[in-house]
Amino acid sequence: MQYSEKVMDHFMNPRNVGEIEDASGVGTVGNAKCGDIMKVYLKIEDNIVKDAKFKTFGCGAAVATSSMATELIKGKTIQEALKITNKVVMEALDGLPPIKVHCSCLAEEALHAALWDYAQKNGIVIEGLEQPVNDIGEREDIPEEE
Ligand code: FES
Image 1: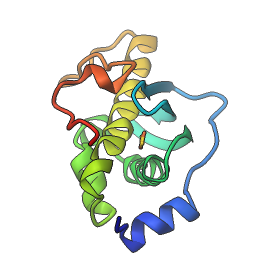
Image 2: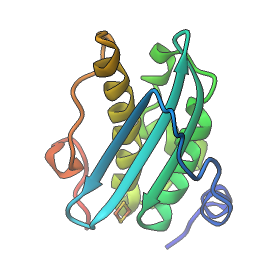
Image 3: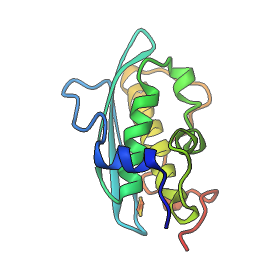
Image 4: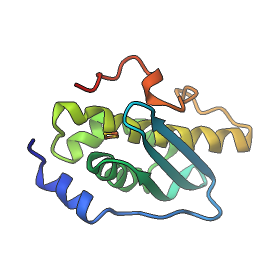
């Protein structure tokens, strides 16, 4: 299996590991099939994601994608943050092997879950954001692990 240099870098030196104590939104998503869990913390002020941190109990690709996803979301508006799909994260990492694509979906869902939590806490509706799943296995558009 071939991993890009960027994947290896974000796996070996993950950015934004940790938690935000007074987070505006926290999202936890798992994948029951592999048992991996990702938790994302966002600090949001004036509609901008000021800070993002994560804790991932998971495979190397899950660590690398959560590192990249939290890097990408920092400084973005909420609407821009919604455009950070698993494909965007994978492209930023110069790709992932096909059987690891679902790991990047965990990152996308964890970001969405944290945004959802923020919206719930503040009684707002984020246009285009659907209620996230707790287990990405519930999402049918995600390729099965081989
Ligand atoms: Fe589970 Fe990668 S194998 S997220």
